[in-house]
Length: 360
Image (cartoon, rainbow, N blue to C red; front, side, top):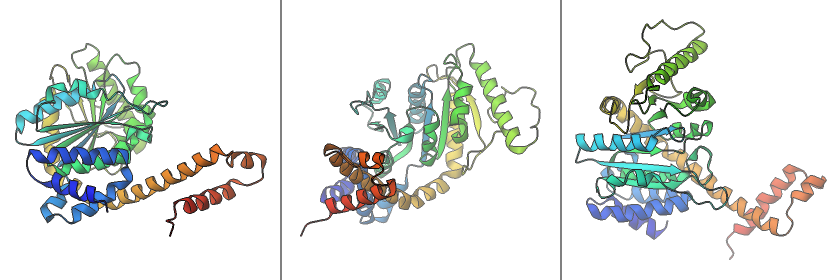
């Protein structure tokens, strides 16, 4: 185990403002080398019991996703303001995942611009990351960053993702609650839900409620989700006279594995309308289900270790392919029928093992 990782974990677990710098360094390491996440777990095992269990925190982990332009960052900013007002002594974390350029691999990381008001707040830790082309916009490194935020005592962590449609399903495997943000004036938002977001949502939030067509979008959302529920159950749901009244729609279909009935909200992140009610609901759900969510995060450590092993194996295979490409590679042999795909895969594995086997 790297001495650097072990030292940084001990420093990040210490109380006080001095823990922020080593925590930031750990997050940078895990962003660049996500396969090193098991080293963090190994180092945490040597801490005091109370400190090591903080890796299972935060108390509440909220995934926020939706179409570009729906106001995810503005809504996140409004949620932070409300949480800071309610709990000034609790630290918050934000992981903002931006899409990477397919040409340079870089990212704008622009969400920090929208959250500049929190830049000098020591109780708010904002980390921007590039998706690196990973399916769903979430790399293994994001999971590591969340673990480190728990280590430094973040009570609530928001994970704001790229918002690219069906590939956002991966958010559901990370967050306790998945919030789908919609907004009027962005085209067919309902069609976007049909593309795959509906299945992963726990909270459906129509943002920009101050716009005149927001209430109509909210009603369309409720109607569409009711139809989806009818299709799943095979019978009609109860008729509701005013579908836009009330935040809870009990007929909405549940995300697989979730503990709650889906809820819908009409809010305005920019104006603050409905934000208090949304946070009230988040806090109520956190109070009821947080122990079970933290237990699930503890159980998921084994899965994250497996992902780290696969990540490292994939990196080594990719390096071998890259070296073969420079010398012609095996693609032409497969295309000509000289070797089969199975034979090529076996050769690739053998060559990768030979290249990475320690010499001695």
